[in-house]
Length: 112
Length: 112
Image 1 (cartoon, each protein chain N blue to C red):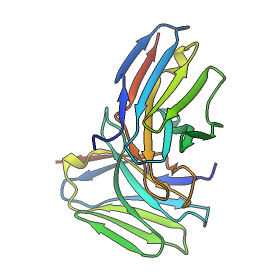
Image 2: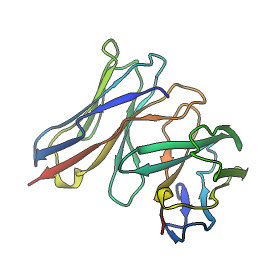
Image 3: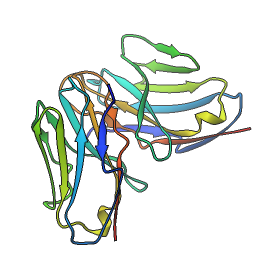
């Protein structure tokens, strides 16, 4: 398996623009997580899905953030409109129940 | 969110020495304790994990020691090498449908 695949690897956008981050989890994994990593706050859980259903989105910072998982092999995290404080590295991770999560390479988002 | 406390925040070790990173938790329902290793520009990678029914797990130069009564666990890196320089995260999970809870991370530098 190729592991968790995220795209794009880097994204630079202007404030106010819409940003969409993409994730392909490991086949057979039924949990998918979106994390954000910054120097100040470390790894923050934004939202996670089980069997494509959102379970907990309490970590989503604002209504500007939304996530979807239309099928078992694809998820998106959207920010609309983006702001400079959204600049961070966004990670997608997947796992099966009771096991450790496997992370993608991340998307480094810069909002200018 | 349940907390996992990690120390130290940063660590400098001489090549060939032993690196020790400690974590403490409060939730006695945690039953899976992984450690992640993250290199700059990469996603966290699962390094080694332990369940509370054993007190120690060793994989190569990496060992987890687990103290259930003290609610503490630690990562030991024997014969530390410059290539081990990375950020290490401890984490904990309640078996089932909860996400991993991460420590804040330890930045390890192994110097020659």
